[in-house]
Image 1 (cartoon, one colour):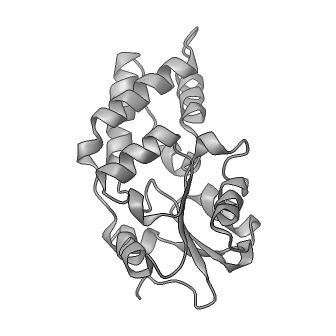
Image 2 (spheres, rainbow, N blue to C red):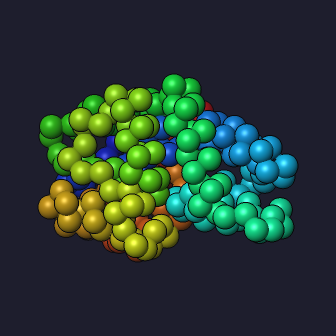
Image 3 (cartoon, one colour):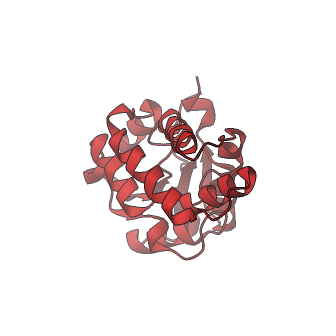
Amino acid sequence: MKLDKHPEAEALIFDLDGTLSDSLPVHIATWHKVCAHYNCTFNEGIIEEMTGMPTIRFAERVIADNNLQGIDPEEIVRMKQETFWESANLLRPHVPVVDLVMKYHGKIPLAVGTGASRRSAMVQLETLNLTHYFDAIVTADDVTRHKPEPETFLKCAELIKVKPEKCQVLEDGVLGMEAAKTAGMYLIDVRPFTYQ
């Protein structure tokens, strides 16, 4: 089984974390560092459940799970993001997904639709040397309704001027897959290709 686009798809939209970027180990290590600072624990199980949501939702969950009193979630987000950016050199690409970017670059429109902040997305794409391959990049900062809502992917389609039903999304997160289906787009679950 080889990773490729649907024959009817006229554009590809890529999730970033866990799809283009093998960032999960770096995210997990970063969350453990942040939680160590607050003398609490990070439940790694929430990663799969919440992948695709903005960092503030994770921070709120950490506060709730650890019953942290008087801690500002924005403060946790700041520390998490700064720690992640400092560790960007540890990021690696998911080769089968990036190979697809290379195959279709210049042939059909390509976009990134991510739940990461604009700065985190750009840090990752620049670290992996992928920024220039995409015609549009939609981040958590560009939408008001995040995955599982379809707004991220619909905005990608609008920016690359391709009808949603002619776009194909590549995703590893359950919430992102739900968003792609709601948007009426073709979908590839990249997990069988990236977790080999």
